[in-house]
Image 1 (cartoon, rainbow, N blue to C red):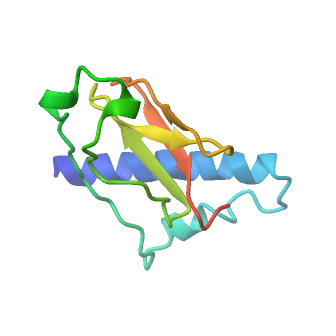
Image 2 (cartoon, rainbow, N blue to C red):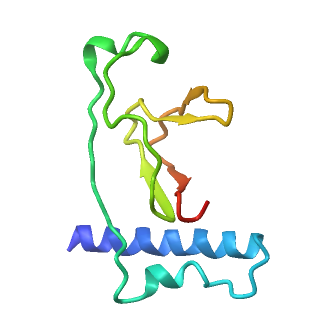
Length: 118
């Protein structure tokens, strides 16, 4: 019951973000993106992953660490919402190909635009 409630709240947060994006893009229908998530037959995925810090490399700068949790990838979905649980390790790739570490913030969600929305 707790997990289902959490999923419901995250879906609502994602819908609000998608509606704001649609508005910002000047789309006529504000729910053009969010209705995919609100549709009962949607195939949205809720996944819980935990990637613990590699303790023997935690003291090294990110560029010197050789062990990765998930590896370089892009998200195929429309949107990804991530929480850090105060664990470092998330990096984003800048347009010039450099990787930038993202500070862990347990009170925030990281909102990533997926391939479908791009």
